[in-house]
Length: 221
Image 1 (cartoon, rainbow, N blue to C red):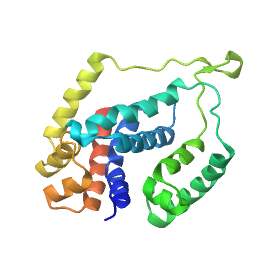
Image 2: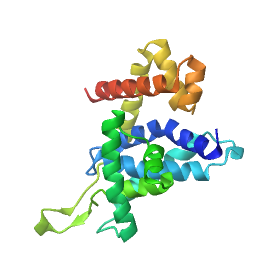
Image 3: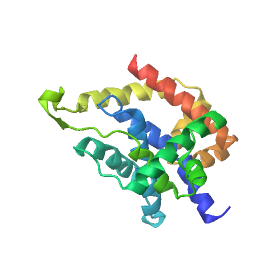
């Protein structure tokens, strides 16, 4: 495997982290797809800036970077200026993403879309982000807007969520619990988790998505 392929695979293996953080900020005025696109940009930046020699887990380093890109969506008011070339690439990116969704039967990875577009993953992520409408936090009252207050979870709510999540994890079958523990507490990639559990990366990816969806539904009950 070439260095570029290994890098793309590493990004693909950690997309679950982007999904998890996007779900955390979902429902606060910005569409999930927009949060996810911004998170992908953050993930790519984290991969490029990560230095294993510092002794940090990748997830520990990546989470603030990814959240930073997502939260910037809430801070940026007005229209975001996009170059003509990026607009043109954005149109292609949306068209190719839709085509890949049909042919693959799933949302394509950024690396897969980038390969089709003939650009690097960071540019592909930027192109997808440019296709989404900006959110103004200071819309005029005449437009039905006014200042938008973003809800912030209280410490008590966060503590309650952590306790509820701990109970839900404890109730999972041992194999499922270990999968999530390796991914989100052990900082392991999907490939590393697959090796530890005797599974394939695809099996880990599918199972992880199902488990996260089930846990989210339980937390929202």
